Length: 168
Length: 119
Image (cartoon, rainbow over all chains, first blue to last red; front, side):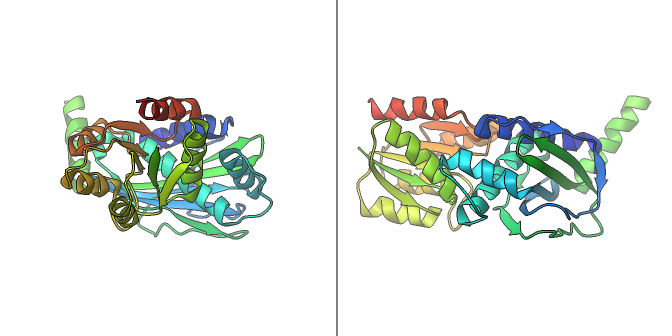
């Protein structure tokens, strides 16, 4: 996956948390992901398809998920219930949607979000997809955004030709 | 004024309904997917349709097209994560009257609702 493709997702996550939750995310160091979020409690997963295909995973600490839902609904949340699961799915949807608008040349469509809960859950992207992960911190705890995108052969070919042209 | 709110996220429906309530609208019909939205639109007369785009069973764009195919001129306000200009144009061509990309400021949502409520 091209490193430049992660940037719209990072910007989108920061923007979604700021706009919808009035919460400032501080990004950590980019790492090559391994498809696992072993310290998180809940993950929103959404598929992308088009001139690139892939998966976006937004994983949150329990405290982040509960606090985010409290802000969205203006009501106290004490446990990971249906509202929290719904909220995490919708936040993931917003991050993916905002990011794909910044990658319009890839003409991607969003699948419906899936949410996975449970301490130490692991999400596999499959061996063919290299992912990039960005950890975040905020006043409520931690979050990780992991993205795996594979360009279609047409886009990959266009990129190679553009690169060849630039160096000729 | 009666408003149909269609979104597969219950949390998002609550956010939209809270904004409608703040604008004085309390007569609200909810739908959790596109097919339910079309069914409820056929069952009751509404003054405004607020719909998401990406929903199970039928998309919000399908909802817009099916409502317009009936000849209805009811205002339709789409609230969606689909933020590309090509998508906005597609929605307008289908018959959407206003469009708001998620994420959004609550104040902006209320301003846009007010535009329909105060007509």
